[in-house]
Image (cartoon, rainbow, N blue to C red):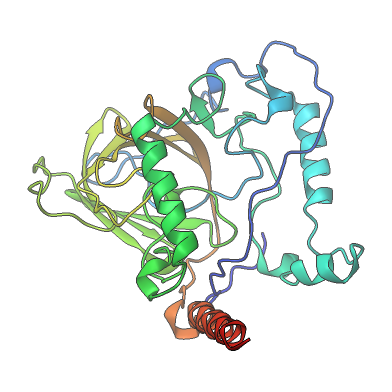
Length: 342
């Protein structure tokens, strides 16, 4: 396991996405049809003293499985064991941040070496080729026409005023929240969360920005529609051995891939073996996406600890962004004044 360190600073200039390696794949039948998790016939779901499935513990979500299915894997839902091993080998070689072979600019851009990252070394246990499992093509559905216009307007506003105020920057940069479902999914580091259970509540403590989700199980309704929250309002219930959590009441200041206050999430947590907690989330916002879509991520039991995520205490990144923008404005004003005098 990579070191997980408290106090990491979120920098807007880091780019975490990378194209998938080109691997030649055959098209045999899937090695685990339907994505069934490997289990042993003797294993049964453990129970809490009050009878609920026991999903307590620290769970790790780091993986190099692509979020969306790459174009060169179109039509292929699962890797074979051999293909998974080759994909892992090529991906780790390509993303090795300890390399110093790209010249000055490339090496400076890789200044955060592998010590600082915890983005995973393996594909998910199901050997799926993408975390998006519905639609079947493993791709996020297109935005609606309304959402496209909204995103274009937001992009234009960011370009014109990228950092007039702290509020112009996203909630992660400002150490407020990574948001739901982002906080449950793979990120660049701190990919761990702890589940704590009582008879009438489940608490999910995320390592990233130490977000704590307190989810009641007592059948209460959602908050009134005029009450909006950074991470929405979550209520849960048990359906057999699966914990189902529905989250609504997001604020329009949150943003998950373009979805804002109309976002509705349905999350499912199912213990499928001693060491796997299967997480599935369905994302639905008819004002943003042309259809609902689903992500699946098997989280692994971790023997590690949840580390304190000290963000504001050492977050010089946001201050630097604002100071840099003020310097750019000053330079532009001086250049305009000089041109006017000429």
